[in-house]
Image (cartoon, rainbow, N blue to C red):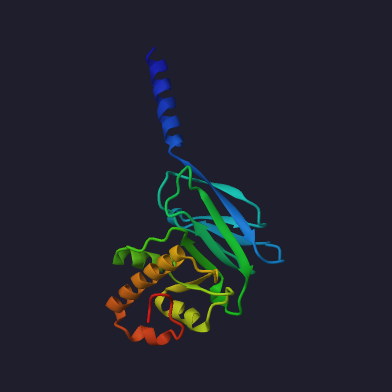
Length: 206
């Protein structure tokens, strides 16, 4: 009888452990005529890397719901990775958008949550910089990144993402708050001299 109880208890705890896992789906949006032949998808928080050989959807298993950071690296495209701020059973789709690669080698990787947090602490901002997931936001008619922003990222660790040129009020507000947060952080850390390195200023920064 005791063995049966132990077996049932073990089975219950095992099922509860697996029940906390979250299955997320990674989907690709290839906006070019080229075929994806190689790339690497990374779950940054888990230091888990997955080799990709074609732009087909696949599933990943996360230990629990919560905040995660993801990135996708490929030599042939500019890759934008979009994902919910918090992954759960309802919000569990990660989108990798592939676009034509620009002439600058360092502009091929962009990763950011669809619902950007604009109230990060300095420590959280430093962590995003270390993970290369902190970016200014601009809107434009193409995805090209000005050379000054490529050089800026090499120096400060903060990149740039370009979104659709059609600006709705919510997107404008989100971009402005995000850029202002980065502006305040850089001013505290470096003073205002860094502004002279950016001729084209992001939304919310003069």
